[in-house]
Structures are given as structure tokens and as C-alpha cells.
Length: 342
Image (cartoon, rainbow, N blue to C red; front, side, top):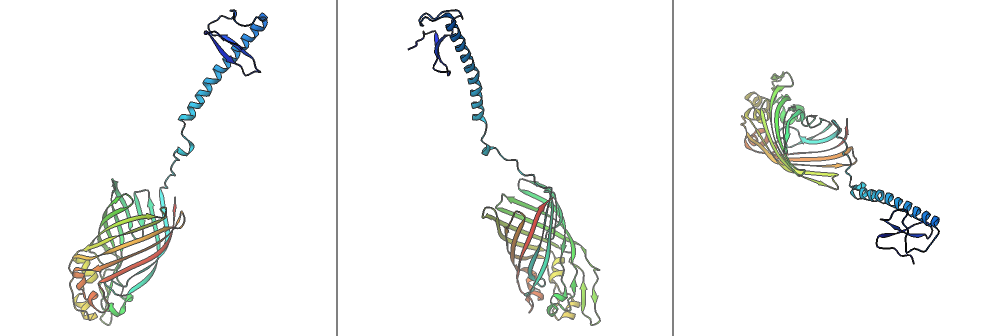
């Protein structure tokens, strides 16, 4: 068996079964005294071969160690976060809804309306939609968002319920302007307060009496209204279903109350109702909710509903207490929408 001195290092070559001792301090021409005597040429060739193999090992090992170290510090492919898809600047949602709602403010009977739905958003800056109107978000920070808007405020038409509205005349729809403040607590809770004021009647804004003495039209609602809501939100089914429900409270001033629930002397003479002057205050309290299910990445189905109890001076109006009225107001609707980005 081949043995080496303390100052020598054993190197095992991979070629064949050759073995040899290489002195790490010896000079090239120094003889290894305890090795069997062999021809000088053969010993020299073996020394050179061993030195070459040692040099190759020294070169390969550092390279392998570096590669292994790199593998240890390189994150696995599954841990590298994917770059989030860029959110489009414009978000558009188009669709249609079917809506059941009271025939007029305080009516006991409902009507069905088929309505288009359009919603356009530009980043988190501006929006335009059928339900929210046209507006901008003035600031958004720490869950708070505040903005301003203009919106369409529906009126009242005699043809919706001639039996109970004849003699009262139409109430023109109006253009309203307002502001809102909203607070979102994560994905699970939000509350909002909205103030709106009628600024222009959409129509000729003139009181008209027909040949039979019945009022045909009255000025639009230019009053002020404040609405407060809060919603608990619940994402379910892997975030495909979103439920929300919460309380609703409405306040309005005298001008708003008069347009919606008041009856002038002329209207009383033409309709048979007693004259009534409504005052401002809390007009309604209730609850509302919605369910939105994402059928695909772009298509969603939505169902919503609300219940409002008319209170205060509005609840004493002959329109509410009369045969065609009710203090309990219900709304419900369903719709289908398609959303895409630009």
C-alpha cells in the first residue's frame, strides 16, 4: 500500500487506478525517498500528471462551490412575485336592469322599469354612471374619499297613477349638484354621507292648468336632500360573490318636502286631496342590500333591494295616508353587466 509523509498529500486520480504522493513543499526535482525505486523518467511523468490533476481539481471545485452558493441564495421560481397586471386607466361597465319601484313618492303600488346601465371610471379620479351621476374624487386617503357630482333627480308623472295623481300635475325632473364623503374600512365595511341640491328644473318649469281646470305640471324639485348609509360587505365563494347590507337614513328640507309630499290649495281643488304643507326633517329610515356574482372575469349578475319607512311630516301627507299611499316603500331589481378596461 502506498503511504505518504506528513508533509505530503494523497491525491487520488480519476484516471485508471493510478495513485501517487505529491509533496506540497517539495521542489520539482526532489525525490520521494520512501517510494519504490522507479526509472527517473517515469517518476517525473507521474509527478507532472499528479500536478495537472491537482490543478484541475482546484479550478473545478471553486467553480462548483460558487454555483452551489448561487443556487442557495437564488429564490425558487414559485417565490418570485409576479408583476401585477397593470390596472387600466378606463373601466367601462355596460348592462341592463329590471327595477320594481313605487309609482310615486309614497305610493303603495309599484311599477316595473327596464333600464340601461352605463358606468365609466377614469382611474380613481372621475366617474360617470346612471346611478351616481357625473363626478370627481377630490381626495382619497387613509380610507376616506371625498368628491363632488351632478346627477339627475327624477320627477313625478300623473300618467304613472292617474287614479291618485290626477289634479296634482307632473313634477319636473331636476338637475342636482352635491358632494359626498365616504369611508372604507378594508373590504368589509363602508359608510357614506351625500348632500345634493336641486339646481335646475329639466323642463319649462311652469305651472300649467288644462281646459278642465286640472293641474298638468308644477315646478321641479329644487330642494336639498341628505342621505346616509352604512354597509357590511362580505366577499364569498373565492371572491366571486359579494354581499352587502346596511341601514339607510334620508333627510330633506322644506322645499324638497313640498315638491314630493306637499299639496297646494290649487292642487287640492283640482284633486280632491286636502291642502298640506310638508316640513323638512328626517323623511325616511330603512335598510338596503345587494348581491353581486361574477359569472366570468367580465360578466356579473346583480340583485338589489331596499325597504324605506316614511317618517316625519312626509308620513302625514295625504299622498301617503290616502287610499293610494303607504308608509312602507319597497324597491328591488336585477341586472346583468359586462365590464372591460381601456
